Amino acid sequence: MPYVDRQNRICGFLDIEELENSGKFLRRYFILDTLEGSLVWYMDNPQNLPEGTSSVGSLKLTYISKVSDATKLRPKAEFCLVINAGMRKFYLQANDKQDLVEWVSALNNATKITVPKSGEQVAHNTTEACVDTSGAMKQVSYKTEIIAGVPIITTTQEKGEDQNGADRSVQRKPPGQLPYYLSRSNQDQSVIKAGYCVKQGGVMKNWKRRYFMLDDNTLSYFKSDMEREALRVIPLKEVNKVQECKQSDLMMRDNLFELVTTSRTFYIQSDSPEEMHGWIKAISGAIVAQRGPGRSAASMRQARRLSNPCIQRD
Image (cartoon, rainbow, N blue to C red; front, side, top):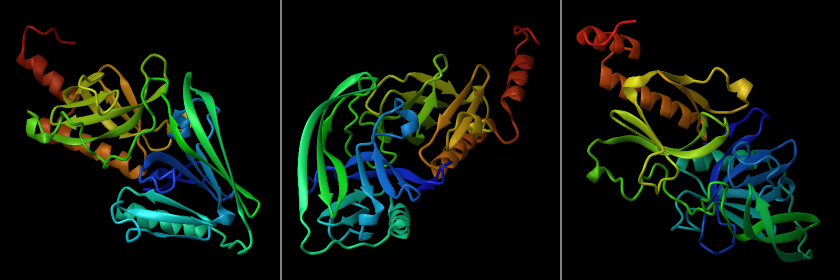
């Protein structure tokens, strides 16, 4: 769902058909800035990208004539909306019906309706360049449209690797879809919740996007949803509490929650407030189901010590 960040901008993930009529939708992070009068999209949340990383596309709000539901125009593209900008139509996919409605409403409310004169022509200019982003080379093809004196810059195609060696040109995948090898049918324990979040590293304190998976007994995270081996498995019995992060103002991170364990505090950022509260609720529910109501990690450790005389008491 779109949310309002600390700079009073409307933000969130959408999938965009960057190459017109290609039918290929790519996941992008959108920022609707009414003060700047622009809609800008990035490969990821700029907070998670190297400082100074430029956007992959932008559009002036003054040139948008209408934003509407495009489900009938693109029946194969689920939850599709269209931005009419002069001679160009931008097709985007929302995560669900409510997400679609909220983005259409937000964009229309922020837009000053201006229609170009019929005699005005559209200029096209396509260039290619090798851009060094986050220490990796990627081939980028840009398309610049000058419509009614307003430049509209988008990438027509790009393929590159991020700092972890992962291809960032990712096609749309249904929200919450599990990796191909981790379907519920072949799991010993049912998966309660899965999806991408951004976490802070324990040593370098940098932020990286990871694929999280919660089951009845553990919270695991992977480098991506295609990896077989988890980077780390956190037993729920070691979790003391999970809550919205009280230090989010100091870290300047939206939608941040903390997972406090016996050995470390994990700081995890979700893509929206709804996702953050969803993770907190799911993890808390799994802990309660595992331990029973009112049983904290400290009380369980004490119970284990008392039940095992070989363990030295504090």
